[in-house]
Amino acid sequence: MKQIMKKTGLLCLSGVLLLSSCSKFGEINTNPDATEKVNASLLATNIILQNLKFQGRDAKACLSDNGLAKYIAYGNETILSSQYNYLGATDFGPMLLATNAASMVNYATGSVMEDSYKGLAKFSRAYMFYNLTMQVGDIPYSAAGQGGSGNIRAAYDTQEEVLRGILDELKEADQYFARGVRFDGDPSPYAGDPDKWRRAVNAFSLKVLLSLSPKAGTASLDIKNRFAAIANSGALLQNNTGFLGLNYSTTNVHPLSGTNDLFTSRTIISALVIDQLKQLNDRRLYYFADPAKAQITNGVPESDPAAYVGADVSADYNDITANLIANKYALINSRYLKEAVGDPRILISYAEQQLVLAEARILGWITTGSAKAYYESGVKAALATLLNAKASYAHGMPLTQAYIDGYFTGEAAFKSSPDDQLKQIWLQRYLLNFMQDPQTAFFEYRRTKFPAFPVNPATSLNENNKNAIPVRWLYPSSEVNYNKANLIEALNRQYGGVDEINKVMWLLK
Image 1 (cartoon, rainbow, N blue to C red):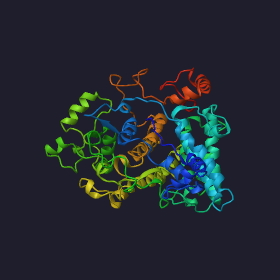
Image 2 (spheres, rainbow, N blue to C red):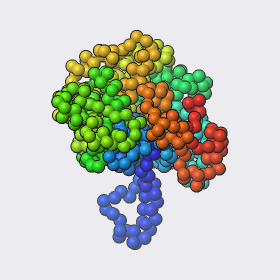
Image 3 (cartoon, rainbow, N blue to C red):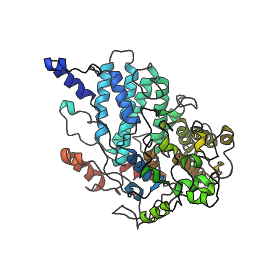
């Protein structure tokens, strides 16, 4: 899931404009429609978009991310390598955010919005560095963003050090936002509301802490106590707070919108997703997928779960393609391709927060509330996100409030065994991130091994371990070219000097 991140040019722009202002040529050729001054608001917009906006180069990159999380399969155009357990190199381009965040704070110093921008800087850094360390392990952290002061070859911090720093920055972000005022330049639905941002910061902090459960006993991270303190703080997302992410619009369209072509229109929903939805009697089935045409031809109604047949994502590509041509599979719901606005991009939500709290309650990290109540409130909130989707795409089975209220029967009812309860919670988090945050879904699979991802050694592109799902990305080639000594030191410290996708990072040991 190599992420191709857009580089901000704001800082460079200010330098170019400064130089050009000294010449007659620059004065004559100044663009009257372009800004000539960088400020905290402009930098805030760019920083937020870097973290929250889908940064892939095209629709296929979006599908590739979902292929890695086993949400989809692919046929009839070319193989989707992520579907078959290929992990390439990550990209350290997002680290430019650290420089821009520092500049944003400098521009805001002395203003009434200073604390809010400091909170945004701390959160944005933590969010970015968290995703990078979860991909590869040790990364440049304490020395990142120091290129302007001459440190162009940043040393790598250990993953433990990085995670401790991230948790500390999130705590600082909470404190700054608690003192903050509404700030300018926020393109998210929160529109600069510091109270909503504070709650989202804390929800993300809980998510991070739970993802570190394999290291719950590490004294330097103090995971359980940090978690309990945040959970009891009273500053968490509420059902009416809304989500942190981005709404799509006619100018910021969904990445799959308008791409009904050779590959997007042939995107198959995985059997892993479809079969789980069927077992739960979950109407998200009808919003995620369109029925298999062969089933409709055979007289199965589109409102019947039997009309929806998923693909084994580990099956041979040629077999998948043959079945696709024969119309045997349920494809991705056409609303993803037709609707420019569509589902919003939701990255931090009340629904996921409640599911995180449900797991923490079972683990004994918190003592307030019940796991059942957290579970049910989380699932209801996840289902409710589709209430605004057009019912015309729901194949006669629309989601309604009455359906949501009666959801918890059969397999969806909260079970009695803690082990089964955990699996229910993990499954709901997996379903929640369909076409939303597949990287989180992959990280969570790596932590819980549930739901079980299919592996077929005959088709796997994991060259060094055909029977395994890879656990990390490779370091970017730019580090080999420009920061080789520090990279080698980090590889020796972690992976016996070998940069390989099956090497286990500190967090997972």
